Amino acid sequence: MYAGLLSAEEKERIAQIRSVDEFLRQLQRSEAWHAASLSMQAGEPTDTRFSEAVSRCVLADYEKLYRFANDMSRQFLNFITMDVELQAVMKALRRLLLPDAKAPEEESEVLPPALRSLPGHNLEKLRRAKTYEDISAAVAGGIFEDVLASLELDGQTGLPSLTEAGAGMESRFFEALAEYMRTGYTGPARRELGEAVGFRADMLNISYIMRLRRFNTSPERSGRLLLPLHGSVTAQIERRALEAGSDEEAFAILRSTRSGKYLPEEPSGSPEQMIRAAQRTYFRRVLHGRLNLAVVYAFLTLKQYEGDMLRRVFVALSYGLSPAEYVE
Image (cartoon, rainbow, N blue to C red):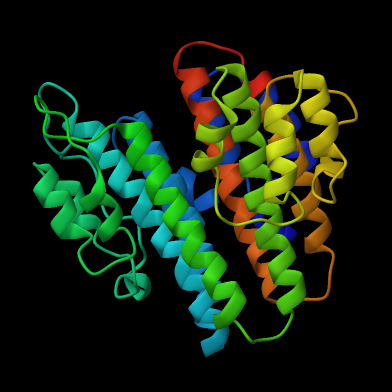
């Protein structure tokens, strides 16, 4: 599966690029992102179009793997389309918060045809939503319906807080995933898959803990904002880290866990940078294992992270900045 990801040499070349056109030409030579570059040849290379091209490329790889998966594996992979729906809801909410809220005409379908009937696909309705009621109707019957119905709406905008909406839906997503891993998935590599899912949740919670500490959020409130799914970073570990007397002490507590050992020995850079580095190391290790659903999950996770990196590079180049610090 490594052919579906950028090599170290390709990343080094991207770090030296100085224009969007040069960047797209480099991606065209890449086996991993060739399709994304080709789709950008007609029309202006905007942020939106590039982001959609990257999403289509990631989901095309997902579709290929989904086609060959057995029924049990497909039940787990369905959670990926629910994650796509979560991101689409957040995108719709951000758009409605703009003064001239309307759906951008240039947006297009990102899910491949074979995936459009899977749970979590109401992207067309979300893309065209003009009110919060439209968004709520688009997720009716899905795992996010109750979350959106419970949010407090602003009296002037008629919309919820983006932070509260994002936190609520993300928590619900991982709650559903945790429940499925406990009682739903009985296929091969259950332990390996559970560890990979738990590691990803741990990394998200570690990043949240470090950010919440930065803003002096109380441990009681912080605990309610963390994800309900745990790997080796248990609720007790989270509490200790939140109550630690310093960021260094909190980091040491988190690093003492099985997931935390993938973090650098000493805090360096932003929490997000440390988390990204830890996840790359862990999931690339999983890729070397015997082919199973955990390996597929690791590949799709790395592909998604790589896509996020390419989006950051595109934006940096659009503003005339060096991409070197974004290639990570």
